[in-house]
Image (cartoon, rainbow, N blue to C red):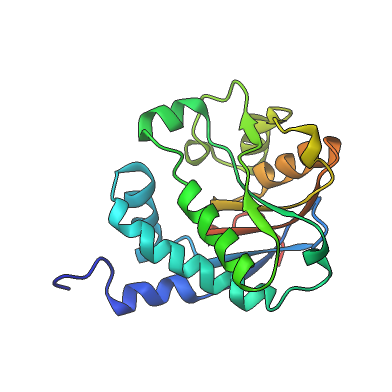
Amino acid sequence: MPDQVLCSSCLDCFHQNQVFRIYGYEWDFGYACGRYTGVLRKAILEWKDHGDLEVTRPLEMAMKDLIAAVCGRADQYCRSQILVVPVPSSLTSVRRRGRIHLMPIARSVALELQKLGYRACVKQILKLKDVKSKSVQLHGAAARSQRVNGRVQVCADRRITGCTVILVDDIITTGSTASQCALALRKANFHPLTLFTLARAGIAIEE
């Protein structure tokens, strides 16, 4: 539609919240704005890999609405600092995009949590070591798991260890990267709470 980044029907695709099971987190479930298909898939790929930065704002708003729907007002987790952590991309992907594409989404999550009464801030404490292939280029849970197995590293000041962590991602497929992130965080004495993502591909993730 003229003068619209996304029309109303396209925006609706980002407000069809999904719940999925994840492992290694204090909450047993993660949350997505919608399914990774159709308009939602096209919009995310144009934003993520083709530099369509105008889409950033609608994505931020969709994630804020998801946080508000799931988290409500602050509960027991507001007693400790919450770190909002973007799931890391490979250095090759960061160089190709020229940006850490999840940072504005992570900031929107932190801001919404603050509005709800949580003590939240963004910290980029995870990185991928020696990962070259793109996740979307691999097929099957085994291949995706092997891509990141043991390659997620925590780089954090010891003064913030022990904090609760909320992970933020763009697309979740098998959940292997999310599980590896949780494992690395627990080993470093953090407490992974849950994961919020823009889209869920729905492959090999139990309802």
